[in-house]
Image 1: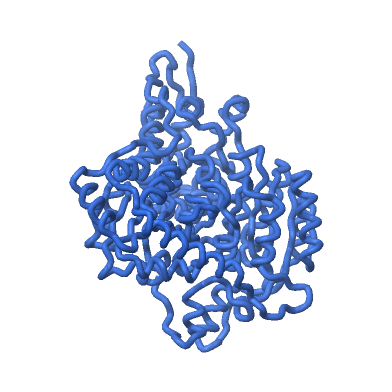
Image 2: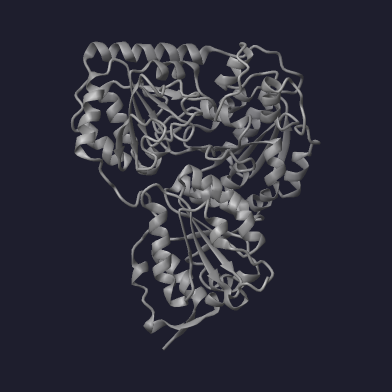
Length: 575
């Protein structure tokens, strides 16, 4: 009989289940697992991060663009506490991430051992499934259970905890049951559940009678791969489609039915107006929270008929209790609706299409005319210039603050795809720098644009060394306004312009990026920006561009509530 360690069983189980890449940071309790990885580099790629939170963001970004589970590995103590921050975003955004963490020796439990912490309790708020593996022989079954949980229903993070002696434990390979790992379990969606027929029939009747129907689509469309079904429903029913930030990309901006981003962060005014005026709204794969609905104005919680498609029974109708609830997979349920929805009448089709086209054209012609200080560039102009040069096959990822609304609404979507990645589950600063690594690893033949800001840069700049080490084709664009701009803007609008705790010192991002091995430059003209981006397009190599932009106080980003505040309504929005 062949003797194998638990660490080797874990590695082989992951390979059998379809895992190909692991992002992580080694620690004391996980050294045996790293030894197992060292002998399987042809089948399991390890990407060494510089921080566990960033490793989780890498796995998150990998999962979003690949449609597969992202895997992150950390060790006990600091590793586990750091990784929680990264998992929180994935949990809130419905992103399938497998966390593998090692723990102290079972014999040391309760002794106050170095790095001891209750990992089950620690991960309870940021995972949908957590299990401690007590015996090496249980690893194949437990790994399959965890991955199945990650991809079935609403996707989300799961955690497997391995005491270090379980990784060391030796078992007989001939007696080991590896059958649970013979099925690939890393792809989403894990199931294609249909909605009840009676609920579908009720929804169809509402849509048939609607005079001003509208669709709000979120990330559930991406997770389900329901792009074509969504577009077909919009075309057949002549139904305008607005997207949440997470839903950006579910429909091409070229579609005559695409309204663009809706809500209170990057939302286009005409899209918000259209949603508020709708008499029937179909919500597809979105939380439809206060931000998405522009503080419950579109759709309103009362007076608008709402239909909600969601894979999670607990989420369907949560914010709209009177909604028709279609619990099931978005692709499957949209197909159910398509079986009964009639073609829209010619007159209604023409009227709606013209209304959308007129509103979009008027919005596109609008430009902020505020004068900028010497050396500053307008965020919109930067996004549009980079987008024009690189085209629609490039994935973008954006940090909170200035990047979010500008990338969400000004980066043009030319094809349905999940290629505008903005973390709006929790809105964690410092996400875009490491997430771009995961995105690039998942799509090795495509360049990536990562838009960050000076506050987020300070939190995550260490990962630029990771980018340099792997020579990843990532273009980093930093919007610098020398403050924690979003919070300072809130203080400006709602706290009587009393600024506190929002003006840290400036870090020279160019020198830091160069110190990590990247080409870097501070850019102050659109002409130079175009030259550098064109060079990157010809030969994509790591490049960091630091661009000073006006503060939000001076040039308002597309945040509707802030315009409302400037117009005289100083009541702070409820998220």
